[in-house]
Image (cartoon, rainbow, N blue to C red; front, side, top):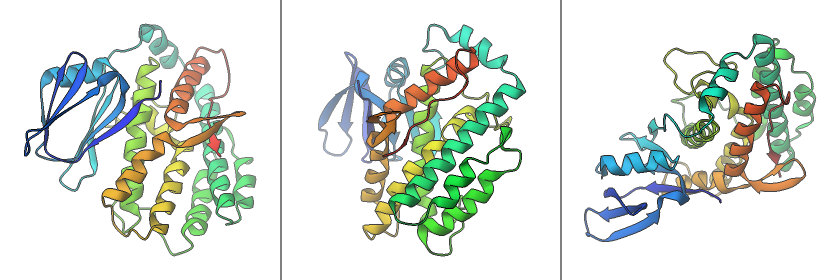
Length: 294
């Protein structure tokens, strides 16, 4: 079943009743209900939103990621379940025992898939993706020669066709990219936890203060899907992260992607990617499943 992305922009009080999310508008008093089992990611954007502990517990039990936004309406925190998969201990052990050589090979495939998707996006926009197609074939184990960085320089230059610097606190369209990546990161972390993996134990990223290193690793080939949405937002004439821009970015998780020979919804592909990573850690396969842009 396809999970939904729910963004709460008005001041609601959230509670739960009979496995239903109950949203009470704190201004009008009106109530709405949504089945918790249908929700994959819940984004709380209004600082006046309140919720019960029972709601939060129920959301986690249904493996829904709850994203908290700051005063600038940018995602700043994430609630994730500590247990969801019945085979979690077995999969944690396989993940922890992964060798450095195995992780280097997985990172090689991850970066190659990312650069290939960047090239496909440039192709779609008639912006000469040939150099990146070639770079994707040159990625070494662990990306020892840092092809990712060299591809990124060419990619950003061609994608926006203007002088652009990808910075966390940079000018437009950086805020749109940040918002889209944060939502993608939450959905990826949700998929990894659902597959019984530790989101803090990465294959490349290592940061003692980052609880989502693995999500940051595995989401890399999905970033161009967000980039495509940002291009769409810019073409619509938006120059700030407004309501319509956020709506477009949230829809990225429901966009069509190609997973092998078939088309699928991106959020479902996240689950397939996480499941394939489990198989890699268990030695059942050598490559992570990643989708490509349609």
